[in-house]
Length: 231
Image (cartoon, rainbow, N blue to C red; front, side, top):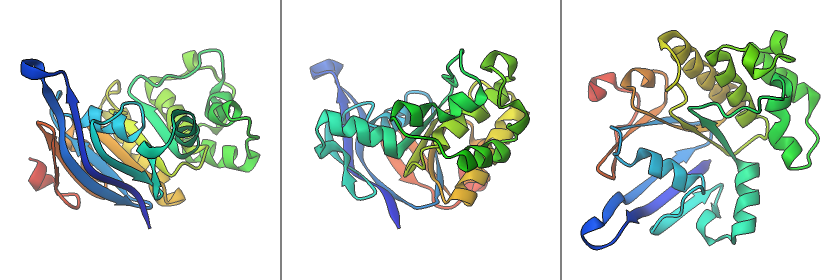
């Protein structure tokens, strides 16, 4: 079942001599439960791609379909609601609410949408992420790796069609980076969760299903995990 389809996506900044083509006719798709990574150097266009798919930025042209819904044809209010209910975000900087504990941070997207959290779902996510014993800890009482696990839980709680992870290990050491990738892989398998992650660290792609490379705004599908291709 196809969850994401990107067709001929282009993003241009500036005009004339200052024009920058950040994305050049990008097309690809992801199936339900697929965990894909996008690698590329800083400034290659991978963050722009993620922001366009997440409706945080508007492409110059092209189409984005999430669960067969045309994201770019929606009016702004409908697109905002659709994004909140169907796309989960994991950021490099965690972006947790300092005054809320682990459990409350995980439930926060549902509460924003005036929906009642399912206790069994919350318990399942806490258990999967190894946070059950820290459910009432504040972010300041957690390590960086634990805070990123909370951010993963927050992304999972809404049963999103797609999770977008923007350099989720960028602020973590090597061990915590691999732990976070393990958690994302477990979530992908257990919940049939579709995940698109961008990273500049090729060493973190060993467990994903597919790898894409972005270079100068052009996306290349490298297929299944192949460290030889990335090296």
